[in-house]
Length: 365
Image 1: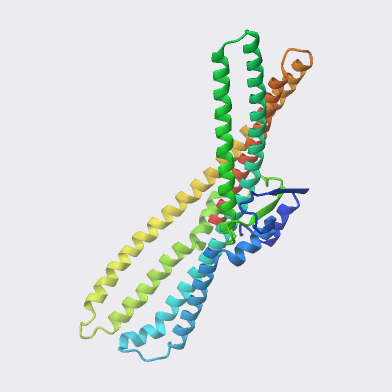
Image 2: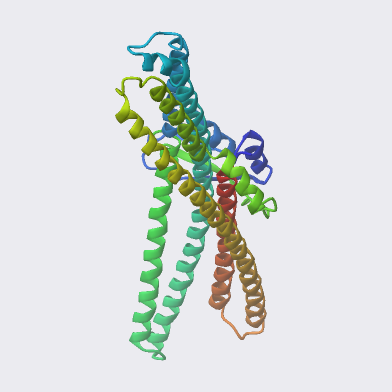
């Protein structure tokens, strides 16, 4: 089971809000434009991402090393020990390294794909957050204008204006921070896609993916991880190779010339068992921690859904009070901003849950 494949990524596009495009900021008049979807991010990362390319090169090198080891399998070495290693050790070592490289390549692809998709959704969220903050700025400026009128009429103090001006300044600072974060996401996405940092990205607004993960079974998942985890597998395979190497030295130690190598390998075998046991314990810890993260993120979704419901009721009550003259338009606007913020928080919690689930899936595979 992989985090992303062409089917799973294509499924996201079913959720697309048709016709809605968001342009990332222009950093230069001569910048190129790039229209992005989830699928195009997948293709670019798999084709152009530097981390993926490095892992692919390493895999190719490990393939060559295996071919070389197999070619040398029947060769006589510089000593009897080396001859036996050619036949019994080096090929298996190269096979181990190739398998680990292949698994590392798969893991890096999944990590980079998840990072790219996360950036995609992060950008959509920050655009919505900036819209909310712009609405807040409009409301606060209206409130400041109202305070100024009251000062002119002599019904409020200058201190009231100072307080409101401070609110406006803080809101403007928050807006600037959001815009700077938006610029950073713009750069991060271009960097992940390995393209000119001034490329203007146009991305399609899509619904946040959310589906409760029901497949987790800690005991069976742990059993699976202990068999398939590449790091544990490498430790166990290396231990088996060390046993083969020890046998080779002991079989050819008639004149005690390999005593030091034998002693070293026996110590190494003891160390191997400690590392294997520690790795198994660490994998169980990581599995349970990742699963707890999934549970916590789901609880956060439930809580933010309740907060959204409360914000909807508050806006409805405030609107009704405004209609009968008990609330001002700015109070209604403030309640709308609270609702918009609650909707944004729900989207963020769903994204956090999605990332936690996909990370858990990746860990057990």
